[in-house]
Length: 528
Image (cartoon, rainbow, N blue to C red; front, side, top):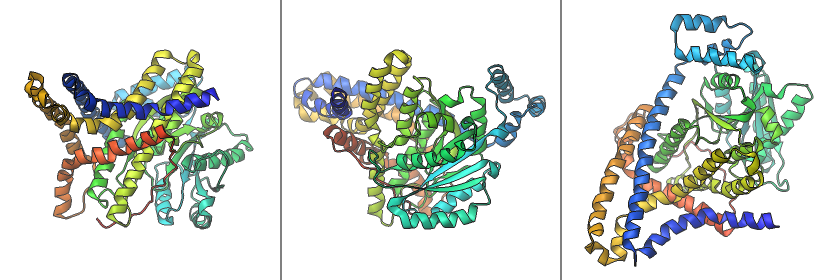
């Protein structure tokens, strides 16, 4: 009972911090406007630093991703054979530092008795589906089929829902007939509805499918560490190099059970078919994950990610009580392995749909609901605090505290930064007219304006990267113009589709109005 009450009080914390940051400056402006002005200057300076940091790591991630996309990952897997003639030949031929480093790490693996040959590795790919059109699922499975990887090393699982029983059974039957001879195995499992203790969401779906498949595999006396599990949404299109790249990094990692592996989620599938506001959200989300990939200390599971079946079996797979099972999985693994858990960036994309629907208003509404669901990750904060309290003696102290502070800071900035940046200049001057007569009051706009000017570098860098990275736009003057003009909408999108859904989620959590899993419709017919 005490733990329950403590948990409930801690759910108030994220919203409380965010609302205090938004309300207190208005109140303090009445009698201590100078303090508020200094707070705004410090806050925007921090935001400027983050903007510069974002620009640097965005460019770095883009460069690394381009390099990775040109590497022959399938050939690199031959380095994990009983003999290593291939790697010796390639080093002699090219003398690349990457290959020399790889050979040294393979030698370390052998010394630690952690070496595996790549022919032992199988991939399980679980596709969670609910009410999706069969053509969307077919495209996802076809992308798996086209991978530069042996299809007979792949097990594809379609996770359907009893809540959509008829469609799920029909889609599964059709797709099994089409792909049963392509892969090692093709399974379909239907997640029962209304399981006690479960929330409706992806976590319950993929957990049920993984458990059913694991029963089959364990009856065959397989080594669970030979199987890597990737979870996909119904619209995900994996890059042809993803599986080979994932296998390489899995084999190259000594403590592979303690790691998860994160590709780049890029919302590019239909980027030129959605309204301009949705497009900006999709680009911003994609770039954020690019940025995070160059910061392994900050990188967390998002959407499609991979773990060994051995680790998942130990952890009882994914959470079935959270609607953000992806980010929550990081913390479950972190505490399960007593802080010895890392997310390894792969820098290979898995392409996803930008939010699209049958009308402009529905596009925007679905976008907001999706972002609010993502922002529900603030619900991890009480989970982390409770588990830190229970297990602190077993955890690496500094690493754990820093991880927790990053979690707090991330959700706090998400909910407050766009609003505070927008209102920093006018609030003290509007609330307290006398403040304008002071030296600080006269110079506040100039100081903040200077900071904002430097921060525009981040937008400029993002614009340039978008022009390089985005799929080529369709022919037409509007697409060319909008690809540049859309960046003018950044202040608007960061508030409407950034701070507000985050505040919405944190306020609901604070008041005890818990969110259900809102499935983002996968529709590719919106006329924009």
